[in-house]
Length: 137
Image 1 (tube, rainbow, N blue to C red):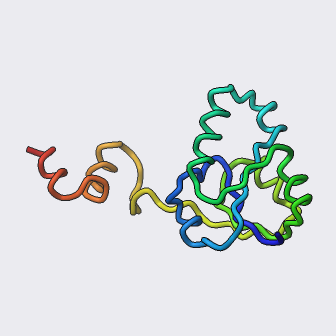
Image 2 (image 1 turned 90 degrees about the vertical axis):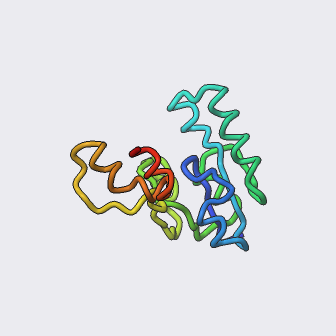
């Protein structure tokens, strides 16, 4: 298993774009014991993560330190979503990583000053023309 799709806690949607774009790559999620302890994940949060992982077809979950687990699996190349989580970037530093940006929630290219200005610009993208017109009435 030299190339994998590495899932982290920001991409636990069965319809995630990287899952759909890479159906043939082995899917791996690691419950990083160092992170769980350092960030003091509650049992409920761990259960939530486990439930999310269980809903994604073809994912194999492991427990341990990310970099060590991936080395034991013989991974050399990783495809994953870019994340601001430093522990993920640090854990993947020894691998060839193909980072993908998170899909945009909406297409917005203005200055964020007030929420209502933003909402008026993106409302129809999120709720559609009919619903946006109904709210204005």
